Image: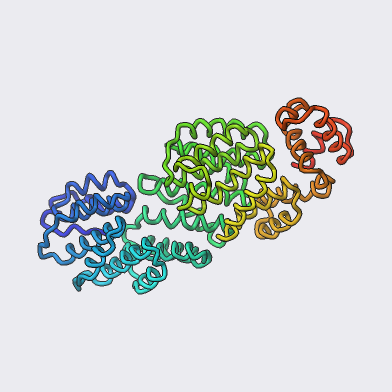
Length: 506
């Protein structure tokens, strides 16, 4: 929210460079707080309350604004009332917020103030789950160069996301970015929220219309306390975007830069997991274990609550990646993240966030498969796929379909994944689909589930004795199953098997 210093006599005594709102808009919250402390009277409270709301501390905003006496400047009083109203909304005091919305706005504020009131009322309706009402209010806004209009476009986009109208949402996010750009002082913190929203849509729905705009926005925004968390997560979506369209060098460079910029254990965790995935899907056998060991160390140091969904999702992605090479670490990660809320069931642990719930099912499925529980794994991966399909997340649906096709030689799942990936033929997902197709015509599709489990262990380079211990079978059973795999592939030695698997799996 834009705040104007109204005491002109006092403001003239400040340095020419003094501009607390510029600091807020640029996301330099610490600098903004220092400047706000030197701002005269009520303007200081407005600035500090604005900061508190941006940092998700509505109780502090209420404390700052409740002790307020009207002093004749109607516009300043109106701004205070609107800030206090939205603080009330965020702590659930909706009736008190409505009382403040009902107050008459001064004519001097024009549509800037009215747009703020419409945005805050819509935000309250959104918090209460009244999305249609929120949309009606925001559509009453008139286009202008103030922050509230851009925030209104951003909120409209999130309403469309909730309704799964992703094409409309992407258009709205771009409208919001254009609105922030047209402001006298572009608000970088608010802008980063729209960038993250656009990143989610572009990758998850494989909608490439705004991919170049997304890259430009990510690269031009400053990294600071007001923007870095959103930009960090948007950057990881961009890594996957580059991989989707075949820009492997750009994907690797961006992933490496994100790792170097990581400041928290959760960020280190996500960056190492992204690089582990990047190397694994390209057939590198050395790099993924290194990055997963580093990710495991970060995971063990990280602390999160059940509401820290971004960090929890990084832990779930670790469980997925580790299930390919380090089953105990994968199981440990899954147990930790699911029990972070005191629950061990994915549906309950993430009942407040369907993205994490679907990923938890997928991670549980991958871990079950790695532990040899194919039937349970297939069911859990299928549940994840169903949730992603309900939300229109084509990227994740393709991942699940390829997992089903790759692990269980499921021809229907393979065809579904190829149809989903028709727009991105150069992506690593499309290349994986081609690899699965080669195996389906090689005879491996005719193996029994038990023989497929043995094949997975053979691919890991294990001996018959090691496979017998892992699968809790006799060595003679493993020898017989291995010989049948040799017969299916038309080979007669382990060396020939390695060469044939390299050809089939890439």
